[in-house]
Image 1: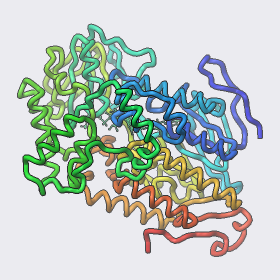
Image 2 (image 1 turned 90 degrees about the vertical axis):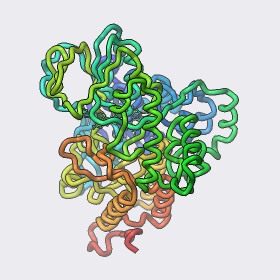
Image 3 (image 1 turned 180 degrees about the vertical axis):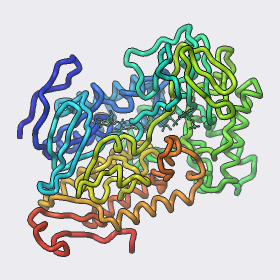
Image 4 (image 1 turned 45 degrees about the horizontal axis):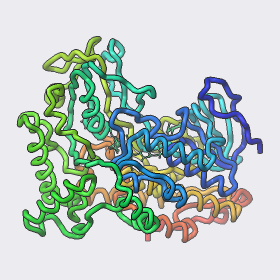
Amino acid sequence: MKDSEDGPMADGTQRLPDTDHLDAVVVGAGVAGLYMLYRLRALGLSTRVFEAGDNVGGTWYWNRYPGARCDIESIDYSYSFSDDLQQEWDWSERYATQPEILRYVNHVADRFDLRRDIRFETRVTATHFDERNNHWSIETDRGDHVTASFCIMATGCLSSSQVPAIPGLDRFQGRWYHTGQWPHEGVDFTGQRVGVIGTGSSGIQSIPVIASHAAHVYVFQRTPNFSVPAHNAPLDPEYVRQIKANYAERRRKARESRSGFLVPLNKNTETPALDVSPEVRREEYEARWARGGFGLMASFSDLYSNKAANDTAAAFVHEKIRKIVHDPAVAEKLLPRDHPVGTKRLCVDSGYYATYNRDNVTLVDIRSAPIEEITPDGLRTRDSAYTLDSIVFATGFDAMTGALNRIDIRGRGGEALREKWVAGPRTYLGIASAGFPNLFLITGPGSPSVLSNMMTSIEQHVEWTTECIDYLRERRIDTIEPTLEAEDDWVDHVNDLAQETLYPTAGSWYMGANIPGKPRIFMPYVGGVGTYRKRCAEIAANGYEGFVLTTMSERELPASESTMAAPSPLSS
Ligand code: FAD
Ligand code: NAP
């Protein structure tokens, strides 16, 4: 096999298109794609990664907006697969900034010599399964045409950014930006009138920082969100030393946990909220608010399943907002009332609510008076016109399915994945889809993914996929794909679990509700990282229950004899 030497094109030079046959192609060079490459290389597989950006990092390469940082503590939001790596890397803050996380991902790429197998500035446009040869045929926007036995989609759950179709944007004379495609050179808002549309995590992180430079910030809010304080701070070296001394144990517990990281102050997690007195509840919420981060939602066992319990946490956050925001009318507008706390991704902020006490920040409620058009010098809502120098779209992503649906993925019989998923994504374990052999989805819909510390979930999927490929190769098995029965059972299981929670009551991006026309299906698996991991491991240990494994020679035989189809583990 040719290992072409033509490298990344950051300097603007052209490279010749690839035409190789590879063992594996990985799409995406975020944290998932990099780790996948590392593991497949260790198996001895010829592997190529295609990445649309001109460098590694994925989320942390694209989302360079002011204030961007992780919302899971860096000690946990980092790779665990190499003890040397986790021992040698020092995070400077509890929640690292985007530049620091990007430096870390670059360090990983260099430390493990990963770049030589990555083709940057190259977007995969199509991947078709060739049934005659049992391989994937992959095409890119640079004219590459490679084939590969395995195709692994590490395309990201939150990588396909969405600018809403508001009339007039093309006539806007100022500058506009999407948080998920931020200019690399940065943006200087000094002295500008800036409009920010969107108050999800990206808006909530960026608004305080933009407000500290801009002449005036207008925040156009359609739906208020719940946010908890990060209480970000430099990391104490003694604390880090203690973590590092027991890192392996911490990581093990994270893998077995519900969320993929150790939620601080976990003592009451088994207790329903209404089983304790209001005073005890308040004490619990106060302690978690003071600690900062996601811990609030782990105060009691039923905050995600019992509306009355959830209301107590929501009322607590409302009270905090009213206390922080001086103007009662503004505070009232900031109170989320349309969804239970936590059912849309909880935001973790640094000074978000207090930003509304600044003279140069105006909150505009576009629920009651929607934006009607972007004008050449700003925008106009139903009630007023705003003159703006810049507009920031913090309007989110076509989450979980967007990046996959942008690729023309075709499986057996030329079936298009996006057609198969037209009424919502259908997968087995969130890793594979029936009719699409040897196609693996890293943190695909139907897996814990975005409800967890993504690092933990990414590592688990990468490791499961690597072990699966190793299993196939050792046994000279050509293809693996889920049975329809196993897939249907899994989809039902994922839906049933979600219906037991409050999640489907919110119009969230988890439900596809942020994208006009997208089917409303709760996409991630809510059963928890530890439970899910165990299920995946059992399925593998039982010879890949629910999958069909086929060898080329057997394909000539009648179907009943040609495959090793294990029954769906959920059907019994
Ligand atoms: P990504 O990082 O999204 O990488 C996917 C890559 O695939 C991208 O570089 C993209 O360019 C490339 N790609 C996609 N399609 C193609 C194609 N057709 N051809 C070629 N390349 C393609 N999660 C947490 O757990 N904790 C956090 O604190 C956290 N913070 C976040 C902050 C922000 C601003 C955002 C947007 C997300 C955050 N997330 C967080 C989720 C985050 O996306 C994951 O943690 C993780 O970085 C995902 O890694 P990934 O490699 O799976 O995907
Ligand atoms: P988001 O949560 O989907 O928020 C998008 C915001 O834009 C919402 O307030 C939404 O309002 C608004 N919006 C969308 N379309 C609009 C329109 N046409 N008109 C007016 N408003 C519109 O997106 P995000 O903030 O980018 O975050 C996405 C996810 O990425 C997060 O949930 C999180 O998982 C991850 N993330 C994490 C961090 C972090 O803290 N580490 C930071 C950023 C992102 P509606 O609610 O009314 O739709």
